Picture (cartoon, rainbow, N blue to C red):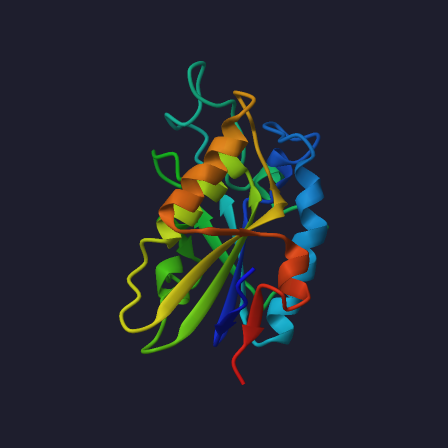
Length: 211
């Protein structure tokens, strides 16, 4: 495995919300199992001066996203189901990205906006020759993680470099079809994202900070 040397880390926690976790309106099987590796990565990111971001659906009550031929009602803004899971380690100093507020699906965190009015792209894009690692995990592999990772590979890099690292043990798939999660991984890799395990990040095998 190649060890990447970077100047800055951003960790994106994708949609770890109550409605996507066990007991929720659109629960992903074992969805809450992403929390432990994500929390470790969030701590690692903060300890190394990086940025922790959490995205979340904030749907209106009525949207084409819901319906008999779409999804059941979930993550409606202002409801408990739309709140981040209580065990996810997100601090007041971290950044929240709201998405899916209009009449679109809002699968990608890059479609959202931070509560400070910024885009996610502005947070992760390299400055000058900066090398940035964007770590992505959450729910679900075959929808919002996939779309966020693919959009991340399209961020303009200028003279810098943005490495998109998807954390395999920190995501779970909906799997409407049994192989959807596997296919999503192939699509992300084809777009230029790299698959790693959280331990590879935490032990310095996949990533090191420039001195």
